[in-house]
Length: 251
Image (cartoon, rainbow, N blue to C red; front, side, top):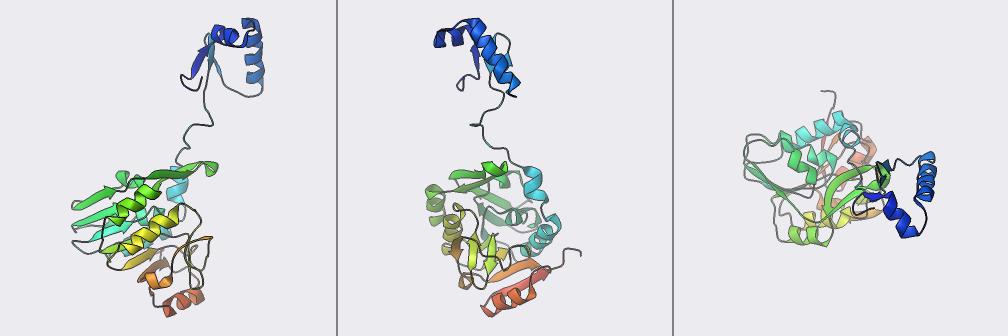
């Protein structure tokens, strides 16, 4: 059934050594329990637990849109003509791509959704391969490439800048992720960047520490965040040597 998504009632009866009437009763029982499986002359699978989780486009892009857009626009200002840039799989970093205008740059990213980003003339895009991760429990698919293959590809590249979104950045905890698959890729991007590392993160990430560490504040040149971030935490991050750029999402 999983191979063909369909099987005849007569084939089921033969396979189980029962009558077709028994199979029909069993199908009716399954339908009464909420399963949508009946097709003409047999049963079919309408939806299976083996199906790929769907990308929750609205959830991924609409969360704190105003802050993310403001941060993305400002971060794009630090990109220079001729730059080669690592951009990771975060939704904030992803939003930077359409704001790169009038410059010849190369973007190297593990975010598969960047294929559908609005790119301006002169922006070249390289997608890193690897294992595609998503959160099936949350019903979304980020399309971030991770794993050994992704890290291997990054290790063969040197960039002039690295722009990362994070799950958390704090003076005490450094750069952290809530997903176990992300740190290896993020760490590799930092290690193979020969220029500034810029963190693009809204106020919800500032002062937050998650379980999976991938860098320290000494790795970071600049944090671009919104005015909703905790001032005391920003000052602690600044004291660690990180330049802070604040944007007002209402302007």
